[in-house]
Image (cartoon, rainbow, N blue to C red; front, side, top):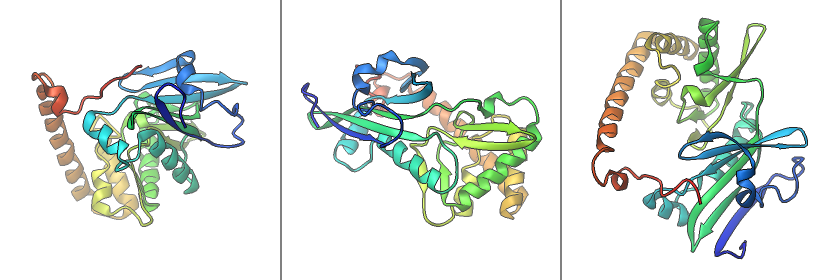
Length: 265
């Protein structure tokens, strides 16, 4: 579909979601009307429609190599991937904000900005915000993560900011966000792949050890071996990140490190 300004757009909006029929279609023109929730490489704005808050994430123009891969159809654009992943996660009985739709812009055949719309969830916190009941929460998250992996689901960016939770009467319910990097398969995630996915939820090493040991308990695997493996991977990842930060300071590094082409129009 063309908008008359040298752009083509792929538009998907869930029917009967309670939104205006052209809500997704009009996002590029009306995006700045929302309240800013997050403003970095990608931007998130929140809109209030008839008492319902809607979360819209605007994905920046991808780095040049990825832009070509997306444009040729060798990779699925992030907005569409997030939408499809959300549908599958909900289908398998786990929680993520309800998806409303997406729009992908292309200019002269190359992918440009893309947008993903979902519900704005209220009354939840991220793992970074937890200061009380840490041990019960860690155990509950370990049990949840084990169930997630057994269901063939694995968040590939399983960080504190992407895991939301609610606590009520000592019970914890979890919800996943930022789900464009997500592994979905029809069989359980393999044990070693699962264990390698555990190094990010907690920044504190002692909390991480508690989490891995509890996870190993629920997966019935060796706790000592699992903990050693995860901590080793974490330290290797920290070393890699240090090298990457140093490389970013080199002239021309933005090309080598695939810096996005832009955030805004």
